Amino acid sequence: MKKVYFLASIVAFLFVSIGAQAQTNVDDVLKFKNDQYDFGKISFGKPVSYVIEVTNVGKDTVTLLNARPGCGCTTPNFKPNQKMGPGQKAQVQITFNGSAMGVFSRFTDIEFTGGLRKQTKFSGEGVAITETTPANSLPTPVKQ
Image 1 (cartoon, rainbow, N blue to C red):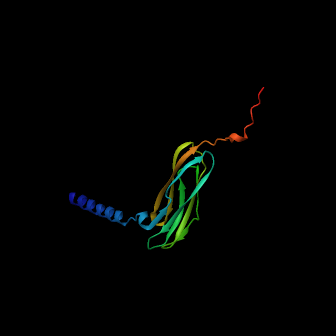
Image 2 (image 1 turned 180 degrees about the horizontal axis):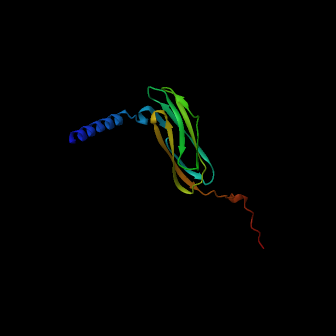
Image 3 (image 1 turned 60 degrees about the vertical axis):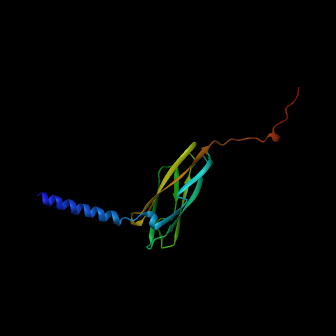
């Protein structure tokens, strides 16, 4: 009986090891531009956007399936089910509604066929919009 458990353990270990080796790393197949984007300072409440560019550097066709934002303040715009052959590119536009005051970071998961997924990040700092009037347009004080 002990031999059966021992043999079953070895077989299970081999399946797990083979499965781990069969997994493909997304960075071996796809190259990302702007996957870690910094807006710098943005006006609080004013939407801002940037584009993530994805290039297929692998040997097989990959399909862009989905882009899942981490919160409701972020909206991805992309062509669903877009196929990318070797050397071809796709774009995902990310729009942030500007709802953060102070330092912020947000994430979006981009999903592809073959179980490939890339977590992207953008960050920045929301600052208050101030209406300032130029000094030369202020009314001249009246002497009494």
